[in-house]
Image 1 (cartoon, each protein chain N blue to C red):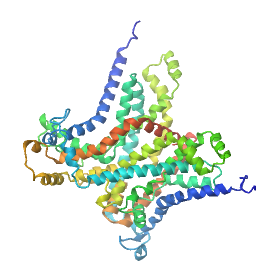
Image 2: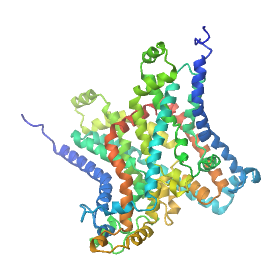
Image 3: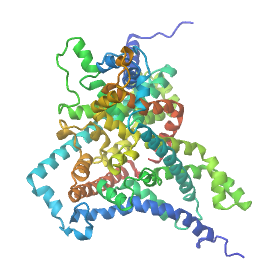
Image 4: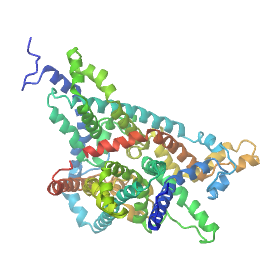
Length: 302
Length: 309
């Protein structure tokens, strides 16, 4: 068999194309790799930007030391809490509302649907929202991460569209058996809508994990800081933090090994970054198909 | 016994019950989306933080007038508007990049390579702007990767201040948002490409069309509808740059060019405590945004025959 001939211009095109995408992919991945290898390398070298391709003098001290940082544990707990609770709440609410708004029997159904969807197109603005939260005593309150995010019109549209695509006979059969709408929702629609709910869950979990603005605006209590916010403050004051840790550990005898691995501003910043980014890096490839599905369904509805 | 049977007009008892179960969510939606609109009233008062609104002086349109009457205020606002327009326009000008990214990625034959590129280039989209800033700091700070590389090879003697400088602020903001968004933005186009009928390509090839002719006459037209919808949406969001990106990158040096409208409202309202004037600005912003939305929707109806909303 003769191979298909590749013309010169074809070869040039393909080489250029592969080269471009290889470079762009490296640009997207290398920064994360750079941070990860720096967190496990000799801290003096990494502080001088000398760890570039391979880690050197591998150690895990940074990860051990970082646990001693003021507020890290509580920030992790807050972030985890809001991610889990917030996601569950909004998924259940979206599932329920999406289902209800597809039920023609419902009184004022059209009005309710418009009432929710209209909120996508306007925004009172930062200050009025802030004052509202203040009046509701949601400032410095864990609930500020959860309650305002429960009703998400876009998710409701997604579930409603999905529910309407399910054969009506499924629900009718249950109705004949005497099931009420709550039972139908819980026993039939919830299990059937799993694919779309998984998509919504993954998007809102990432959103909760990454959320930064709400802490910045509504929270001043250190115990309610999230990892994202903590990271932001660490980047801005990494220098003072390094001295803090140094003072904490100076009671023990200093040998060469511990000197080499002493925390520098760079190491602290990068290690916290790694702690925040690793969950995303782990979760994303596993759930990629849900992300892609989400954007596709979303694009249909615009 | 027939009173529970749903008839054509009258809703059943179950219908009311359903409404009742939805009601709590309507209230939530009202509290967090509709009720805050009442806060616009602060734009007409001289509001000072701990006081009650009733204790503050009603000043009418004073703040709106002050925005345009006060020289320093006006020049500041003018700069903010310039930044907002620059960032939004750059975003709109570069909005074709994800589409071309998808078109060219589609030319790659090796399926595995394609899948890997697709997965890895979308990762930056899923990290927050704080993390992006942390990445930027690691690479571009004075002791970061780039400065150490440049110094090692003797290209520079003193570290370059990439982040703490007001040079090329628009460009660097654009590049960071491209880095974060291009891979993800391409996904939607890639799916559209996958939906194109393969026979179209085969037929065109028989007619002697080359690679670029196929891209130009088959792939591109198939993607344009998606592109226009996204373009309209970004025009409608012209004033809404969001503030996360600009907030994390802002510092004393680049403040002049990085303050977009959303960030400005935050800076003067929350940090600066000028509640009333910040409300006035965000109120104007909302009104302009909604008008833009209506205009864009109208244009879309006229040109494409369907509304986007």
